[in-house]
Image 1 (cartoon, rainbow, N blue to C red):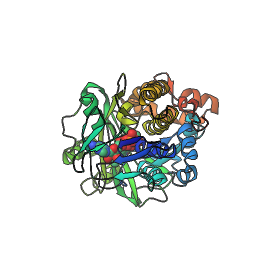
Image 2: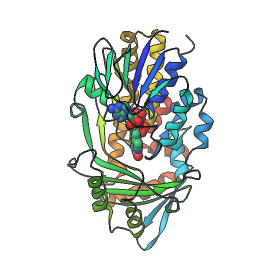
Image 3: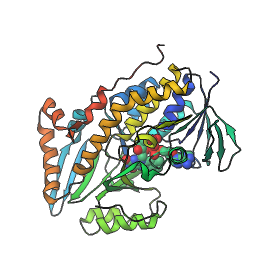
Image 4: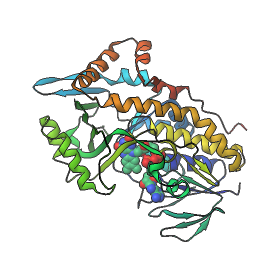
Length: 401
Ligand SMILES: Cc1cc2nc3c(=O)[nH]c(=O)nc-3n(C[C@H](O)[C@H](O)[C@H](O)COP(=O)(O)OP(=O)(O)OC[C@H]3O[C@@H](n4cnc5c(N)ncnc54)[C@H](O)[C@@H]3O)c2cc1C
């Protein structure tokens, strides 16, 4: 098929989309603004049923399982009292029949490897202009012509800004922030997620057998968005320090690493809501088009699923985007709406708003794990939506055309 597709972004949605488009015979180029695949930084992400099934169809199901974090015990730290333990396996099982937790950077590397030799990857560049006829200008490279341009460039998507306007037109703040930093390996214990929670905040550390470091995650609520520039990392670190210092000796130890950490991620928990995420030759996939909110709504599984569906619909329409884009949006509508709804509930319950909320979170989780399977599954609801909806999404076989 002589259809040239430019994909912006090489994290999760980008490499999955590139793999499937290449498999269906499209000519694919991926442009990524980072100088190389971003191998460090980020939190563990969840793959639910359909995302695992798609990974298996890409031939990487075993590789994904091999690099699973294996975190199955949550130890809730308390001042002057022993930690309280929660069996996470029971919570995962209640959420999905095929759940795998894996580091974002490991997953990105696995997906990238599936088509790295068949797809053109261009690093250290970014799109600066997209003309209606498909002519694309870049910050560094020469202007080139493509039939289709797809933004897989995350919550702060550049393609979305160029084609649809400023992010503020489509985003709503869910009342919380997320920071993740790398800490020395011995701060974590493979298999265990050490957590400390109080009203308005939650922090934790975990490691995995195969990792050289451990990761500390900080989640906190604010009524209004904080005033900072996205690139002002020292200020972001100050926000974390201000919120989490002097609460527990272990947490203070994690904070001592903030200045020297080799990888730091900070973002608001923001949800995107667009009526349509396609315009002319341009479409969006993953967080760029329908981020339910980092850390709260299954955004990675949604990105994998969206990339698979978009590639499949384009293949089915023989590359005719006027047919494929509306079909893609129809096929995604329910999944996007349910993850949004789940994320809005999770943003409130994962970071408890009051002392009673922290107590309820810990004791509620312990109670949930003690219930028989079917009851547990029923209790895994946020805002009326259960994360189990992922497992009910159809994974159509687009190759059987
Ligand atoms: C380094 C990093 C750390 C992360 N850590 C967390 C975390 O701790 N918790 C969490 O919930 N989510 C995290 N995320 C987001 C998470 O990966 C996504 O929510 C989810 O996996 C959906 O993936 P995506 O591919 O749609 O978007 P993303 O994973 O956000 O990927 C977007 C990609 O586009 C690239 N990009 C951005 N702008 C441009 C541009 N102008 N031109 C070309 N490329 C561009 C980015 O470098 C990135 O590779 C992180 C993302 C990144 C990139």
